[in-house]
Length: 326
Image: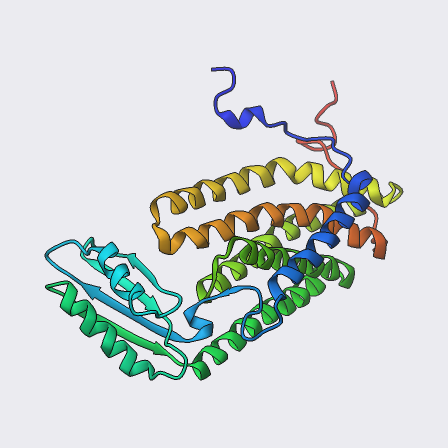
């Protein structure tokens, strides 16, 4: 077959002029960041502003129950909780067909433990047999600590990435990489706010994964960029950036497509509990690839970078100097 494997359809090396369009896409990214921050922070109210704060950060109760040997009737459980006016209520299956997870908020001024006992009693009256296997109550103090820990985790990850890139390359490379990371994080918050995906510890884990993926993609491009700077010392900086990105573009597409296949399977078969996670990470792969091209590289172009003083190592023909003598 002419085009099998399908990867043969992709060119070995592309010839796109990325730098020529950098100012337009960078301006668009700045506008997208401003819009994302506005949507995510408005209204300016604790704890999560415009985000759909989950129980992890808002406080509430998590129950796990089993109705073995019968399958769990999720609709009946949801109807019981909806009648109790508990605010944000989530009911989903997990593990076996007879297992279910219930999340609900504690009403203002009510006791979390007493509300949990009342919910258990109401479910037990409606569904039989039922056994509660887990009860976790997240109070306002704990939820505030979790929110601070999540923010510190995101900030610490970005700071450590800056130190790593600074140590491996130069400070200019680190600033470009961090600019790309902030771009990815802010736009992801905008996605979470627009789609009303629950902002929970699971969402924080997804954002941290996006940071790692974006940084990996950026490091690959930077490594080729540094190599080309040493080879082509008289070539304009913009052309070196275009060359480096084009040389790695096919590799990036193949890597991204492999990750997308895994996340699509997670989205289709993972159930409601993993669907939001897969959506966030699919979005993160797309913007992580984009930011490596139109955020990290243009920052280096604007800031400038010191080219190495050492001469490039000459390429030797295989078999020694006399390999091509007749």
